[in-house]
Image (tube, rainbow, N blue to C red):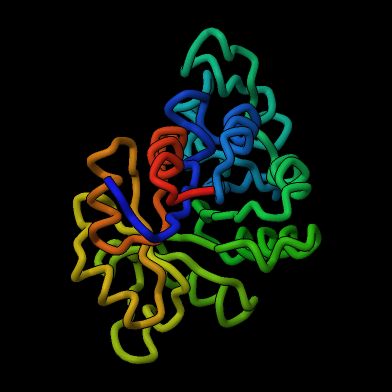
Length: 249
């Protein structure tokens, strides 16, 4: 595999293949590996705190059960977010968004992909307010599967946005002033990655990204299609290949 382009690599929920997803140990490992970007997810507690967890419920990744929005911050922080991954990570907990920002802020070249999972105006407002507080606006993307959230993030708050292919977005609006006009980038799942789709987005000024790139085959497919950033569950895989080829620092 050879490419003359530099390809960026994002760690999906940190390094979710080798660490408990969306935890501080996962994010720290991604930073150590030298990723260009970290992708992570936010939900909102009952008492209005942003916490880092992918699902709207805690069932899959913790020893608890129920919706995040039905729990207080105190209740969320008592959950074990490592034990389901491995007994070696027993006691690892769900981070707050503030803790995450305190971790990533000292790395000025690290890009941030912040996905809003609690798709509400309140969650978006709290998210952008904290990113601004930490001075991270310029290196952050707001991501969501709801086009209304992306519209507000771009028009009301001036943030870069990452969307998804049209039919994956709730409230997608077609037309020259529709949803696509608000996107800075688009996350394309590997089963939809094609050169024609990448070129279509590039011609609109939208950067095509792919996910999840976890092996040499999917990386090569992404490169051939003109993808500019790959998101990986195990970012060491694409990083090591790209570095051997001179396509990553």
